[in-house]
Image (cartoon, rainbow, N blue to C red):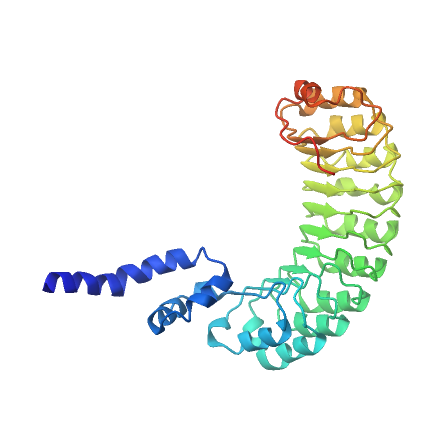
Length: 350
C-alpha cells in the first residue's frame, strides 16, 4: 500500500507535470487558457512553465483592445515574444497608447506583432506600439488604409531589427515609405507590398538597391511598375520568392533583369499579359532552380517556352499553371507530366 502511495505521489509531483509540459507546448494558446480553470493544481502547474506564455493570441476576437490590456496585467505575460491581433475587433489607437503607458515593460522582448486587418489603428497607434518593442523582427499591418508614411517613419525609428515586413493593402503608403524602409532595413528578408498602389519605380528601386538580403518579395497587383523598376533586381542574390501577379507593364525586357536572380524558387507571372516566349525562355535559362511557376492568363506564350523550360527545370518544378495560355497547345495533365515529371500541382488560380 505504501509503495502504491509513493508511486502515485511520484506521478503527481514529477511525471504528470512533465507530461503536461510536453502536451501543453503543442496546444493553441486559447486551449491553454481554458485549462487554467480546470483545477488550482493544474493552474499552478501550467504557470510554472514560462515558455508556455510567450504569446497572446486575440485573432478575430471581439473587445480585443480591452482583452489585450487585461492580459498584459497578468504576471504570466511579462516576457512576451509575439502578439496576434489579426482581424480582431475593437482595437483602437487608445488601447495601444495605454499599452505604452502601463505595460511597456512586458513588450521589451516582443519579436512578432500582427495587426492585420486592424483598420481603426492609425499612425498614432503605430507610434505608440512600436515605441514599446525595440526588438521587433516581424511586423504585419495588412489591409490598413489609415496608416501613412508617418506611421512607417515611427516604425523605422523605434524598431531597428525588423526582417519581415508586411505592408500589403496599405494603400496610403508612398515612395517615401519605401525610402524609409530601404534606408533603415538593409537586413530585411521578406517584404510584402501587395496593392500599395501609390508606389512607383523610384520607390521600388531604392528597395532593390539597399535591401539586398531579401529572400521574399511580394508585388502582387501592382500594375504601375515598369521594366525600369527591375533593372537592379539582380542585386537580390538571395531572392527565392517573387510574386508579380498583375504586373501589366512588365515586358520581356524587364523579365530579362529578373532572370538574373539565380536563386529564385517561386515566380508568379499570372496576368503579366505583355510577356512572350522570349521572356519566359530567359527565365528558364537563368533560374534553373524553379519549383513554382505560374503563367496563368498569358496569351503570348507557346509550347516553345515550355520545351526550353523542361530542359533546365524538369527535375525541380512541382507547380506549373498554364491555364488560360491559349498559345500553349500541349497543356493537358499528361502532356505536361512528360515535360515535368515531378509536377504535383497544375492549377494555382481558379
